Amino acid sequence: MNTRPRVVTLGPCIIDLSTFFKLPTHIYIICEYCEGYIMMLTALWLFILTYILLLAFPQIGAYIALTSASVFVVLRILPIDKVFTTVDWNVILMIAGTMGIVSLFIESRMPSLLADLIIQRMPDVRWVIISLALFAGVISAFVDNVATVLMVAPVALTIAKKLRISPVPGIIAIAISSNLQGAATLVGDTTSILLGGYANLDFLDFFFFRNKIGMFWVVQISALVSTFILIFLFRRYNQRINVKSRTIVKDYFPTVLLLGTVALLILASFIPGKPSVTNGTICVSLFIIGLRREFLKSKDIKVLSKTLKEIDYFTLLLLIGLFIVIGGITESGLTEEISKSFVRISNDDVFVIYTLIVWASVLFSAFIDNIPYVATMLPVTSGIAGILGIDPTILYFGLLAGATLGGNLTPIGASANIAALGILRKHGYKVGAGEFMRISVPFTLSAIIVGYILIWFIWS
Picture 1: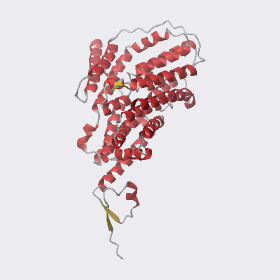
Picture 2 (picture 1 turned 135 degrees about the vertical axis):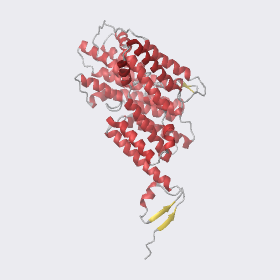
Picture 3 (picture 1 turned 90 degrees about the horizontal axis):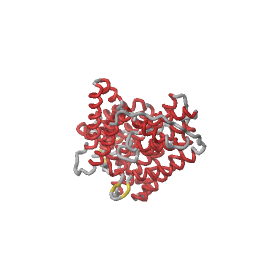
Picture 4 (picture 1 turned 135 degrees about the horizontal axis):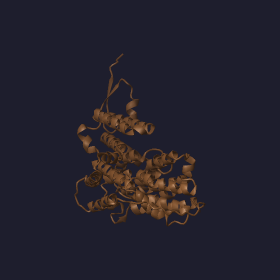
């Protein structure tokens, strides 16, 4: 009996991943692309394992992402010479600089003063809650969502204490409103910064893009509709309010710094052929100016360390690791295969693909952090557009809308929600998922449906 192994030669187009595993162990495969398929399969399982670990152990997510990135490099899925260029340093610098400026802005107490001015003009508790939610939304369009919640939630707590009412509805409204407006501008949320960096969008592109209205206006219309939902939900909160105290702000420089950041980002959008790290350099430079001023004013080195500690280095490391991981799966050809799967499922129908991306993003973001999700889906979305030969803009905006708003559905869907519930827990209020979702679900569904329809009609 001849036990010599049979040799099967396969062309590059007739082998798939399932075929590879179904072949008997005594059959050797000779194919110029076999190594690529094995590499793609390895990347797939490594990527799945990374996501499972991120979901299971979010508190060490940065270390998981960096470890996974190292494995991609060690296994040569991603060549070592491409590691540095795979990371979007413009995004990393923008996030770091913005976080630093926001910490100075919060320290100045200006957000608290603005909240006081709004409250003094409201007739009852219902409108105080709604105005605080809208105010949080306005801030969140330019400031990180979690920072916004940390700024505005204490005001809601103070009002609730004075009126002897529960602060739960107000703080939930603040959190979900912050998440909604995070998609409005380039610096509103990490997901927006990721999209801006990947699609090369500038600050003004979120307002008007290719002679059409941008995401800012889509978000504002969605916010208007969802505000009516809040008015209905809080219709019984009709207690009168009378707050005469007003926060005193002694340092207006951080406010000027934040407004200057927005202004310079707008001006930079008009510069043709600017360096790829322009926006990040602007944010970091202004933060350094603010940091230097704080030191000269106090002459205390502890001021510098205190402000630097406010930067979320965990998120920055998580993103760096994810950029490398995504670079690895892209290099292996996996994102291209995922893109082809989307196209096959939708039968080449752009509307079906758009719908699938939006609502899948809503569903996934309700349970997982939208930062790694968006970072992963951007190259997939680009790949889908490339296969279909269409402008990816509608798919990009659909992804941003679904992923940003979907996080509002559940208490664990967005960092701002977790921060808000943490504040309530610290003050003795335990909020269950049902209580949270009674407010968040109607608010979110109304906003995402409006956004879903508007994006399609504007960009299809």
